[in-house]
View 1 (cartoon, rainbow, N blue to C red):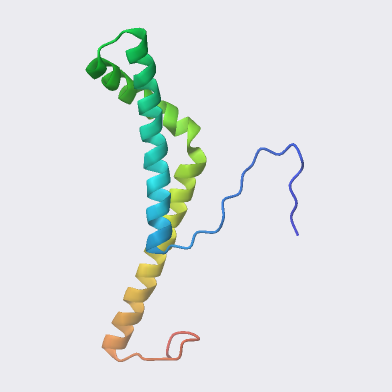
View 2 (tube, one colour; view 1 turned 45 degrees about the horizontal axis):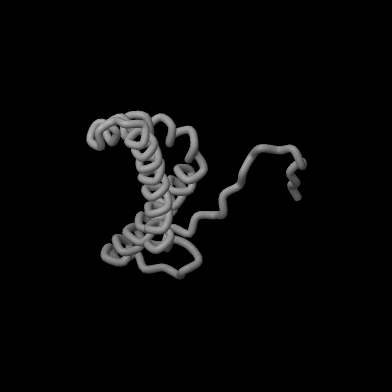
Length: 112
C-alpha cells in the first residue's frame, strides 16, 4: 500500500490502455494544448502590434520549449499510451507468427 504525502508534487497518470481510442485521445490532447499555447502567444504578440505572420513565427519558436516544460504530464501520458499500443501490437504479431509456425498452445502461456 502506497500513499502520497499531502505536499507531494508527483502526479500519477492512469494506466495506459493502449487502445486506438486512448492513443488518439492522448494525441488530440497534447497537440491541442500545444496549438493553444501557440495561439495565445501569437494573439498577445498581434495585440501588441506585430504583424500576424511574424507573431505566428515567434509564437512557434517560443512555444516549443515552453510546451516541453508545461505539458510534461500530457507528453508522459502520450508516451505511455504509445508504449502500451506497441506492446499490444507486438504481442498480437508474436501470437500470429506462433500460430503460423504451428506452435499453437493454450492462452495461459507459450506452447512447449
